Length: 123
Ligand code: SF4
Ligand code: SF4
Image 1 (cartoon, rainbow, N blue to C red):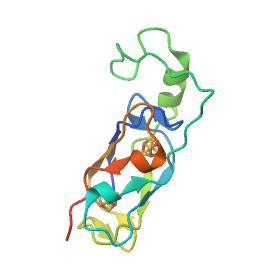
Image 2: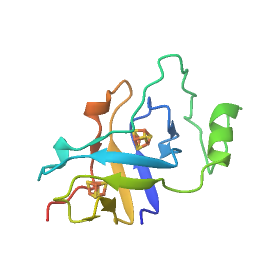
Image 3: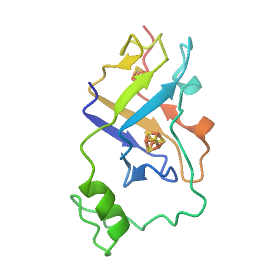
């Protein structure tokens, strides 16, 4: 079971200070043997969302009075459950990810297809 998830896709509505606050996510990859072919199928961009400035975010407290981020992280209970169909990844067993921690790549302004599971390792 994944215990930690770092996600750099900060424009995703589920992203709060690079933590994924979704209860569960789907990683897509199919039969690929290359991590760059994977992506987070749960990425969702809310164009109306004004992302908080988390420059001074420390230990779960948004130092600039950022109530939006603080509220979401209060409800945050570790990493989401991860279903993944990248069946050639060494951490995949019956479409469940068993890595202890994973990292999702993606930049601000990214699209779903531009995300990537950086932890993918081919069997
Ligand atoms: S891109 Fe995926 S892992 Fe990252 S915050 Fe969004 S749903 Fe979570
Ligand atoms: S580490 Fe492997 S099994 Fe886990 S989400 Fe990434 S690609 Fe899927």
